[in-house]
Length: 106
Image (tube, rainbow, N blue to C red; front, side, top):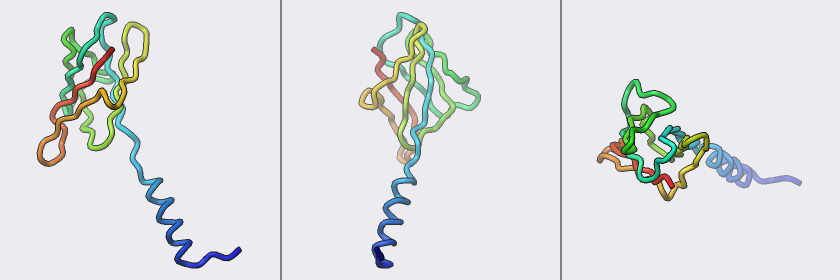
């Protein structure tokens, strides 16, 4: 079976565009066992620890500055909770840099 140059070019471009998708930035946050509510994360803070430790109100600083997709993993009393993407909100400045991140923890 012989393919034309145009067909091969299209196939190559489609495969390259699929492979170019960035993996989400993963942030791990440790909270108290009884915590449930909204995490308030301040991104782009140099020297922030990993995993991040949230205070009793759910506030924490993170070092990543996620420009694309963001995945939040919560360590809560020996359990791992993955926050659903629809429960994560990222507020961005006019240039696209994240300035605040919220995540609802059940």
